[in-house]
Image (cartoon, rainbow, N blue to C red; front, side, top):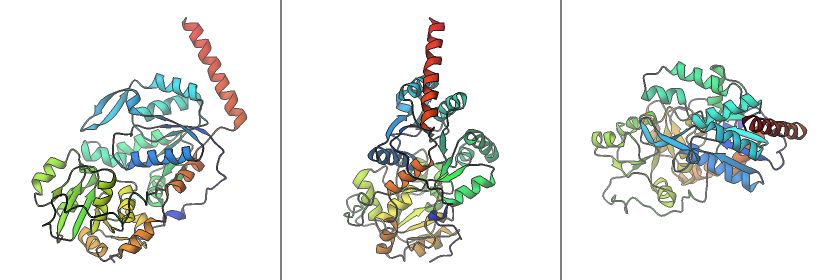
Length: 384
């Protein structure tokens, strides 16, 4: 296997476990939600499903509940407008015992502002390397992005991150209260027992090995590094996005299959020989676990996510030379790859999420919402 960068495994965060809270009312505020298809949305939807199965009541505040506009350069993402007053009313009506703000967009900003104003404890999470993401699309220095992110997360009781490497980087940038929140994978949906698929998609004459990339086809995903790597066989890209047309024209030998979902997507993972993950800006890379769950090894750069998941796993390889990583991953035993993926579960991820929440103690919570209801009534009378 290729040279591995040193890294702390995912289970070597400082032990912050405490007994799980009883059933709680949890608000989750997010700018990333369905119909978006990405790792953040999959993480949030699975976490919410597990939290509800554990007996918690979860209220989701997301873009489709408000008037929206398309995100510049990425129209598939909708940005909420004028959401703050409605969010206030929903918080008052739901009376949450814990608030989690998952993203730093308009909904996240509005919810943060309300929580700071009300002195309501809340937690946040860091899903995307936002400074690098913005800098790749606009002439904005990375340090400006980090200044914004530090401002946004500073009042958070806990900032949840997916890997020890990302935690260390954020601490070096001056972030605080950083806590672990790892990820899971559905090992039933993503299975090595699925039937092959590429022959059905026109690939009967494609030479093997099959090198696969799955995700948003956008500049920050660094897919071109994969496409220009000298590899035998066939390169396959599953996904859609603003860079697809340009890359498809530039690399006509690669197979662009568009977005795939459900079992079709899982079969795409299963039928690949190696999953190639060239991103430097992801904070975890949920697709890494999904590929591994089908038995497909992963090749990647030593970036956040891969550097925490792959070294020592026998499920892939990392290297600064992507070709070296790819050829090393090709030698991995698929049964060992699957066995490693089975160590990750969404229930464990959701339990860690709940442990990180910062609920008010019961007596203070009751007083807080009674006081807020009284203030709201007084304001309504004054406005009448």
